Image 1 (cartoon, protein in one colour):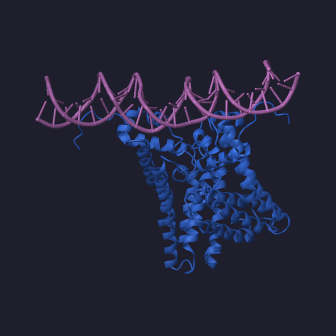
Image 2 (cartoon, each protein chain N blue to C red; image 1 turned 120 degrees about the horizontal axis):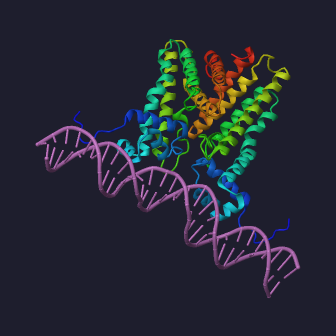
Image 3 (cartoon, helix red, strand yellow; image 1 turned 135 degrees about the vertical axis):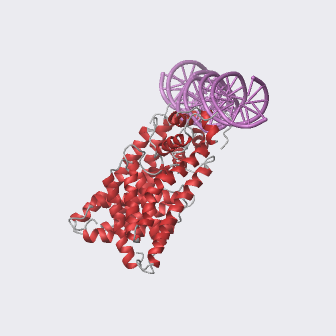
Length: 204
Length: 204
DNA sequence: TCCTTTCTGTATTGATCGATACATAATTCA
DNA sequence: TGAATTATGTATCGATCAATACAGAAAGGA
């Protein structure tokens, strides 16, 4: 509460949003401090004073991404009445989110830092952990579907969770390649076609 | 034929293979000239004399990757007697190739340069073009399946080609996350489960 | 044996990377 | 008001980036 010293002259939350967009568009190593400060409207000493380092800023940016963009995509999982609808809506939300105009295409978590490297270990690990959490969320929803009797007892939830998470990752690259929303929805249709077979016979 | 001047003391083809592995593991921007020369066993002037620039070296490396690793994956498309077997073998070869021990995991074409940037336009465009060619190859094989009567006339080849190409892209990220071969094959099983539904009813 | 050509290794280029030193400005506390 | 504290802008830091200058070495052609 008691704010000592000269007050900050920029909006920290707004600057973080700008930084998130830069990381989203360019990836961790592709986003330079110059890129970031230019987008955030501040000088580098202010960036370091407010966020600590490029790495810490990225971690805050991914947390913000997860909370805002991620929720938009993943909230469908819990809201939908059936596991099938949950997965389909989650994928359709993914298609919508990955093809928004005026925003970077694809997913920050999927594309932000794919190449493990000497100094980028923490960054890669953080994104990997978030991707693993996404698969876990899918897995839990599918297991609920089995517990509730919607899905057969021998339904291979692990295989299905891995499969749908992988499709979502592929959609990030597809979106980066400039795929239209309808092209992304075609992928969703393909992925949901698998549901029928997986659900009716257990895993293939 | 007439080799004037001092002969090269290193094997250009072997050096290119090493460079390909560095780009494969670290991506275009993640691979520094130092990384490359160290792996190739030469100094930077030799690199520039033999390959021109980092960008030209990358383009040669991706061409080599396509010719060697790519053929291993994609040759299944033409060899298999049916479209379904072609797609399944193509995906299973992908799972195998993406989880080879002692090699980078995932695909150079899919992961090499995902973030379009000022100076990397040509690199991104080249990889994008190769990814588009892969989808085209899938599409042609599926259309053959329709022409030969294996698939119904209303089978949506475009949707299926996009879907399977996207699954393969997702498998690159899955592999980068350390997925085992069996985990990748689980994704293949999921993707092939979609075949049944797509082939029996046309697109979903 | 020169001359030309090409490659090799050392050393270095200007640019940019992430990160700071420092002086100054703006606020709270006493 | 004066001391303490924190933020800001300028001007950098050493390290590393991709790319070369340059001199010497190794080959062919004359």
